[in-house]
Length: 226
Image (cartoon, rainbow, N blue to C red; front, side, top):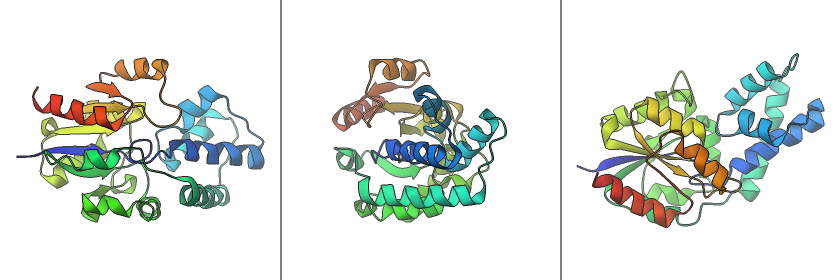
């Protein structure tokens, strides 16, 4: 029986995490006159859904209210940036062609967000169908809670021990660990390829860390033999 490879989307399939951080950074500055440090951006904006970004910012900055008008501007700006500047990670299609695995996506995006992102990535449907896409609005709690990974495994008919996650954010790694799944930390997206981030990933207990998709395939083969 094949194993299940659960993909995150942003920062793993698409080099897009930088775009969403850029979007929030721009609008927080122009609409709220708030300027975040690089550390604050990393802690508050990276690797989570827009809902979680909103909650984190409102909890972090006293008196900040991010109303529906602000979130509508976020949505429109994300669509503009994604439509014009989102590109696939080099070599990702070669990993999806690995026939030792079934493949699915478990993303922190909502269904509507994932739908427009997929207009840029129609080739993914060569390897999985729409029923293999799991979005944050399908579960009660987003990452770093394990809900979405557990839903993907259950829906696809796998126990957690027969699943491996490939993600780029600390929240992915923590969610995978809570789900009792191994995880590959992919650090090849823009801004992630540093020794410091690699060490931070290792401390979460991931199976391995890599910065290119050729190595992902090698790691997957190693995982199958463990």
